[in-house]
Length: 196
View 1 (cartoon, one colour):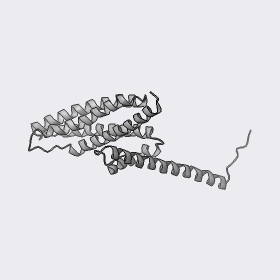
View 2 (view 1 turned 45 degrees about the vertical axis):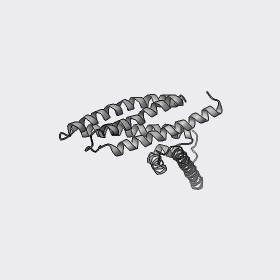
View 3 (view 1 turned 135 degrees about the vertical axis):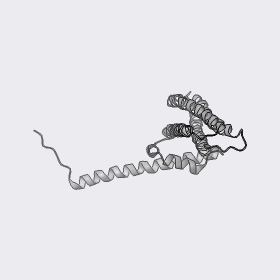
View 4 (view 1 turned 180 degrees about the horizontal axis):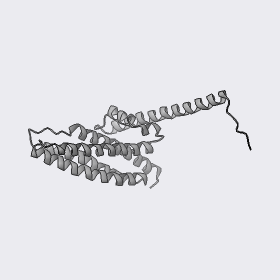
């Protein structure tokens, strides 16, 4: 039988502090990556708010572990997908209410259709992204931006109607624009590296 060696209290403390410092450094690096990425995104696209971008990433714990732009890009697509999925659920809840105006109900159904299609598009966009087919991913993310605009525009067809989805549509638009901006940055890097 072999004896198990116990770690001395000072060795344990050193080990514990090393883990904390490594975690802290990773957190600081990820935070810097988020800030720099959001700065570039908001500089390149007037539709992207720096504050919205940083807040969106900081609200998702996966972002705190991102080590590079490629990882952060995938996280941004997944944050957008989550937001679109929640918007679909919200629309379904609104449609369950009996007192809805027929025009609003029709608009909500149209929004549900375009957002449901967008969820399928996300699967394809993620597949393209992981395969570094950034131009294909770009095309799919652009269609998701169109979905948010199409949804919001439907309510504008009648002057006295206020969209119950304006904030959600703006969020989907901005989140998609952030993901699209990152994909475009990666595509430029890919083209500059000659890794076609």
